[in-house]
Image 1 (tube, rainbow, N blue to C red):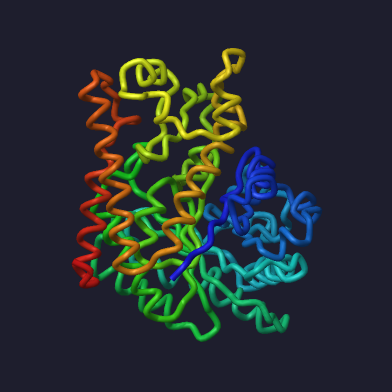
Image 2: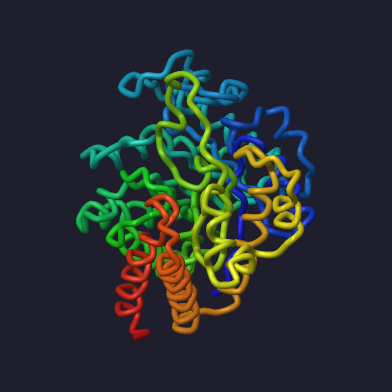
Length: 394
């Protein structure tokens, strides 16, 4: 019933590693090669690698963005030019063989079979994934005598999850391989809001995770923000936390060609009682107007540093993210200590308390915009309640 917390590594991943070492905020990491070149992965402490999951990030196999081109098994590199319709069996085998060999030699926790990103609900989704990656990787695992547990990555968008027939087909397919022991789910919502506000998306993702668990598969849920608290109701074995927003929500644009330099986001701080990241521009009003407003900010060593008058707030300051790792991991550890109906009741209590916090802020005249308010909480509570009704917990 308990679960582990993994850090989704991206840019400035050293903050995650420091946080795990200094504050015990995670049980392992998911390595993203887009942000971490091969030599640096190979130079990681063997203890870190033993608990790590490698995500090959083959989402766009013809576009090796960032550090992906340092991996000779990335499809575009292995095939000297990737075209899905013309990706020959020999190139697929070379790519799979190299990727499996790298994961085994690095002694990662699992061997991950990657997936290609697909928008919408393509009719050839299953056939394409099986031909390009699943079959070649399973064959490579067999040829290399792999003794590691093999997990399959799935990138599922909200349309896929909400369509009962489509999601059932994917579920039946993904659970039908004897050699696959786990599923690494990445769920993409079409909304660009900073928190998930779609109850149907969350409810259907909860159901999908639960159905995987009924098939005795290990389930890892990646690219999560605070909604990891809600998704814990489906009993995954691993949930993730991340620093920058592109490690807390999956959007394919992160792996596409850039459109030029963009302005960075405003610095925001995680408030655990509000289940929300709050823009720095609101902090003064909260301290002045919210009843005992200063106590609303979680007290820890990073908060103490950030609230010194000399601290220069900026979205690239590590203290913001180490504060988040510390506070969210504390919440998740408390959630993980429960299970079933008890976990549901505890999660509901967290959401209801957060709703109360936001109501009190509004009553005090602190009017937060849609990226900072509690407008996501109703969707979270609805999804949790629906799932609990299915489980017979209410």
